[in-house]
Amino acid sequence: MILIDELQKQFFLEAKNSPILLSDLASMETYIAESYQERSIIELLQNADDALSSRFLIKKINNTIIVANDGREFSEEDILAVCRSGASTKKRGGTTIGYRGIGFKSVVNLADRVHILSKNIGLTFSRELTNKLLEEQIKVPLIRIPHKYSPLKDY
Figure 1: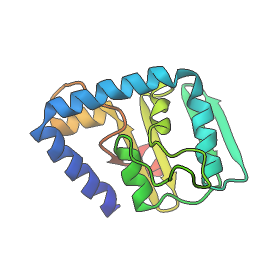
Figure 2: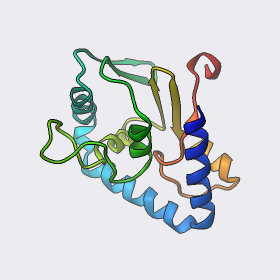
Figure 3: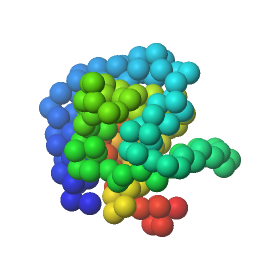
Figure 4: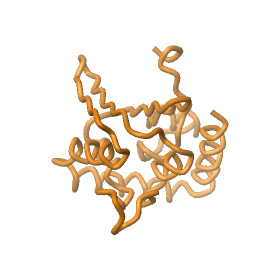
């Protein structure tokens, strides 16, 4: 989980040094969410296909939506790309559907908290946890600063 700590520190320092940037990213995330409002599930399905998944699960349990696939595990580059805006490990004209690095962010239409579990990696995105980390209540994007997540410990 060292990667999560490093990314959290990097993006935390960025936010502290430029709170306006964080607010701008939150606004951009809202715009993406609105633009992709009807496509959130499709974007997740396309990501599963890009990961060479042969199975895809979507299930709603109470107020929780579980989306899973059996595709390749997240790499460090994938995690960094998810945290950033407009960054992707996929290339236009390649063998993948997605390449813009914004489709996953459409999940902000579906959730207040997003968990990613992939082999030995567990991270979560949460505005609440980000504001606690920053020690102030400001407008922050959901998907920017990663936090460690362990489903056995956190639930």
